[in-house]
Amino acid sequence: MATPTFTGMGLATSLGHDAVTAAAAARAGLVRPAPLTVLVDDADTKDAVPVVGHPVDGLAAGFDGVGRLLRLADLGLRDLLRSTPVDRLRAAHWLIALPEGVPTAPPLPLPDHDAPPDPDGPDPEVPGPSAPRLAPEPLRQFVEATSGLSVPASRFATFDGRVGFIRALGHAQRLCERGTTCVVGAVDSLVDTEVVRTLHAHGRLLSGGPGVGLEPGEGAAFFVVEPDGARPSLGSPGPGALANEPDHLYSGVPVLGRGLAAAVPRLAEPVWPISDCNGESYRSTEWGHAVVRDEALRASVERTLYPATSVGDAGAAAPALGLAFALRAFARRYARRPTALLLASDALGARGTIAVHAP
Image 1 (cartoon, rainbow, N blue to C red):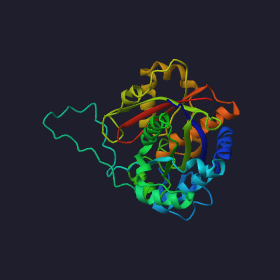
Image 2: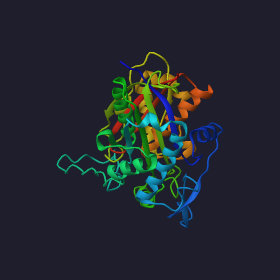
Image 3: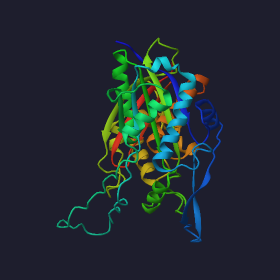
Image 4: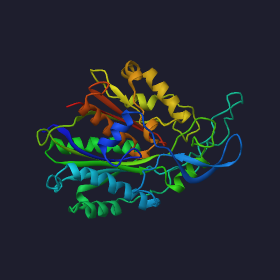
């Protein structure tokens, strides 16, 4: 049985259009926030101010909606193809994480603990996800056009949200163990105009808020996963796990971190957590409870990396950007530990983690 290993990657973020530049900038503590076109009311002055985000500079400017997502995918894919011979990808399976649908209504309010419960009251209706922002088939055709490869639908699959990227990596591991080369990727933009407006309407943005909330970002990342020995290794995926958090962001119930803690695999060695926490109070509360519940996280929390502090919240692409930063840290020998642990939490309850080992 072949051992899966990462042999190539491509990246596009607000810090650069390639993996080497973006990871070096993040390590140096650089950030490139910029005002977006959406205006919101300042919490103190009530003046209209632009939302601050982390857009990919230059080549993604002027695009919005599906066009912006495809442009980001183009940037990340072209970076991948600069370091990976196309011939190695002719029979590859493509496994891509796409944006999670932003729920159709704001989060339910948390209960008032001083008010008596109403046992006869109706159960609140939890908001469901909106329609997908990018359908799989246009992306498959775009991958074919950009790479010049034939990518039939039988070798192309998509997954939803941040945890979708964890699922994609797990699927790639199983395929690679049978000798199949895979390209695993993710693309998302919370800088998209309609997404920014929705996040503001749901009270989730930092801009114009009370000091907590997310700064929207965006990005695309692609990784080649091949059997060990095919090419020099950048690192290798390890054990992972999936779970569900019923007390999710939109449930109206305080979170206790049970889902995220349940998704942490049992590992023998200390880990380097790479969290997709984004500045929202819900996510911070969940992370704190999960750390208390899980011994591995509790022993490693002081070493945690938070990519959102460098590139904003990149949605479904957030764990993928964290993986790219980890692989570059392995290559440059500044990783905080030889095993990274990617953590992912989606707004509607999916939770996932996966370990990544240094070569």
